[in-house]
Length: 146
Image (cartoon, rainbow, N blue to C red):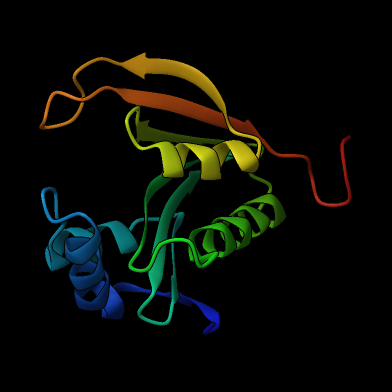
């Protein structure tokens, strides 16, 4: 398994290509990634050509904007999520939010394994009419709970 590295706007095309493979019905283009990666608090991680994670932090809260892996069941999503959460924790983020398709059982299991809890529901959120679960995770500060 390749190393997880942080990337910036120069990798927008790579991220867009990977996103298009993982999410062919809702691909983000290169310009969208470039714009997001120029924003304060944006963090993008990739693991070779196998997976990516895009987060955005504002003060002590963050949002997982997108997470995708090209080959399922190899631990790539878990490794990216773990690394992203470690970086957020080190950056003084205390709460992480995300939305996930209610029908996406593997993604839901991944987030639940990391301790995310449902905080809400967005009915008919996706283009296909599917619902989105809103999930939240409270992070302990580095070194444990305060």
